Amino acid sequence: MGRQKQFWLWLIGCGVGLIGLFVCMGVIVAAAATLYFIQQPVVDNRTPVPNPALVTIPDGPMTLTDAAAPVNRIVYINPNGQIVTVAPDGSASRQLTRETDLRFLFPAWSPNGRQVAAIASGRRDGGVFILNDQANSLLVELYRSPTNFPIYLYWSPTGQQISFLANHPQDGLGFHLVNSDGSSQDSLRATGSPFYWDWLGDGLKLFIHSGHTGEGSRLTFMDINGQSEAGNLAEPGFFQSPGLSASGRYLAYGTISSGQRQLIIADQVEGDQVFAQHQGQVALSWSPAAEQLAFTSPLNRSDLAFGPLRLMDAATGDVSLLDNGPVFAFFWSPNGQALAYLTLPSQRLEDELYAPEKGLLARPQFQHNELQLELRVVHITTGQRRVLLQFRPTPLFLNQFLPYFDQYALSHRLWSPESDALVLPMLNESRQPHIMVIRLDGTLPYPLAEGSMAFWSRQ
Image 1 (cartoon, rainbow, N blue to C red):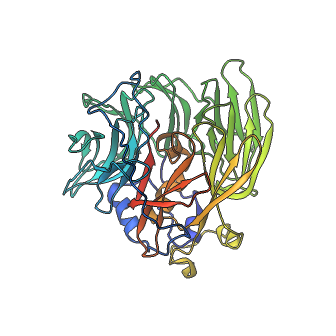
Image 2: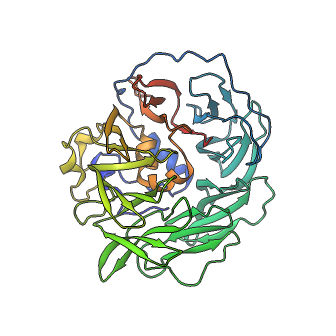
Image 3: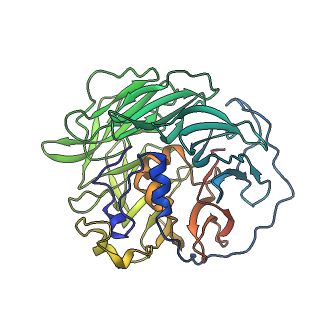
């Protein structure tokens, strides 16, 4: 992941500017603070009725082999920058942190759902912290630096380690690994900018993509000690996060062949490859339940990644169209049966979004966050599409999360564990960020809490 000029000219078209996710935490907070809050989407503002049957969460961390009841909780950041967890109906709320000198961002659930890790910024430094999902939990410091601020984190599949990015004085970004029990010492494993990765299922290796296209870029496997395989699997092309299929058999990435931009699915067992040519950037994400790859790319050669949403079969290379777009971001349901995605309510902004890059103040008509997004869901088998709601995204979600959604989709979940609802931050009528729960059963969305970002547990 990293700061890249070619990403998301649509942000400039919307007047919020292109601000890379991977800069120091102070820049992240400053970027979010400069944006305006605007009106609420059309949703039900009823207060959810607490469920008296509260879920009991054991104290302390839990192993992946523990056969406890499903967790099914949501973590969010409240207006004071503190971490809170809550049941989906609004009950059993727990404020996990009450720090006066730290403000937290991008909390991520452990794979077993018993712990939360988050990055934080203080008055003079930034760090990575972990704590149990319980009241008055001990905040454990895993990393802290007054100069190299962390900006993104991603749990290993086993929950034993946390990988994260922090600023690096020479190479832009440093890739770090720490043990989740706090026992790590030296955490730096690699450098490069931008830097993206996906974990192998055993938690011992990572599939990494770093650097821009050309000399110095990397597309390879790396072990948890930072040792990389010799050479690149292919010449890295115009894409961000690489991906491994749920079975681990197939790789997906972008490459350049004979001057053509290609999306590649590589079979690690048979050695075969299938590909699809694309324009501009390509964003990709594997189904969690099948050998199917969802991807977007523009219809013309540009520096954008959004466009029609398509589905590619790993074995045959067959490609089907799910939505003609433009699709800005997409997220697989945990059961692999549906894709939630964000697009425009109409095409009225399309000319602006594809317009040539200009300065931050080049489009005064969009300076008040007029952009509205539409949340849709498509069923993979039937192709049936549904519009769930229209909303105005929070500045942080729009500017920091969506441009890198393909990497965040690996580490931070918007879907419920049962694939029956999503959680999203959005602006209300008072121009304040709220957390909303959107169910797929046709009931009205409802506000869960005031907050800037929220993510669902994985179980």
